Length: 223
Image 1: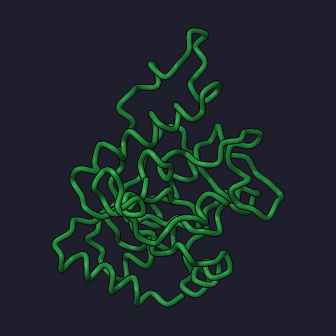
Image 2 (image 1 turned 180 degrees about the horizontal axis):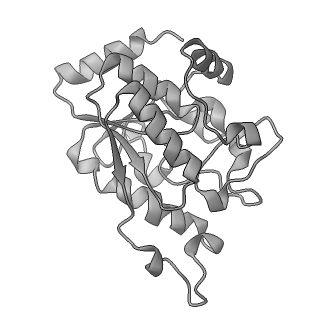
Image 3 (image 1 turned 180 degrees about the vertical axis):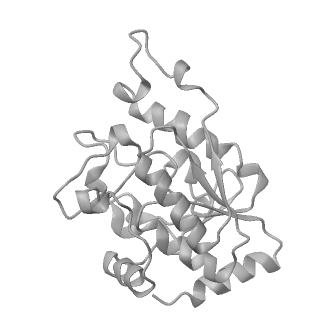
């Protein structure tokens, strides 16, 4: 749980004049990255994509931990109103095309700010699923932004130890079986050991789109 390499990397970005931002979904494990950043540089803005579908408990947790850590949180909202995210029957997009729903409500808001920054800090970890285990700690994307994954190699146990060591708040839904918490329509409590099993239950979908190839393709590996 040593964070000196994160301190060094952020200092390097500062020396190079790079503009940094972070994103957070404000789950319990999100608290680790947020706490690390608060120890190093509280001025780094943290963006939260408010899809309009979050659990009320997530919004409460966001406010709680933001105040506790003294971090600067900025909420982003989808540009397409919910009234236009429906099919002819009136059903909302998540009922029949969850990938497009995620694009409208998560990816588009983030895409709108990428041009303002040089480095995107986020808390993805290799242990979370088979897709993410192939990530590298730092990648240059086709959007000409560096994605930095400082916690990529941290294990679930290390995350738990860090949360316990610093007595960080726990998301109120965890004790009800929600291991990975996203939008309310697509999140369910589970009994399994894989936290990501809480998301998109019964679907082949495992990612919201923020960490998929269209927005995080590693261009350096193709050179």
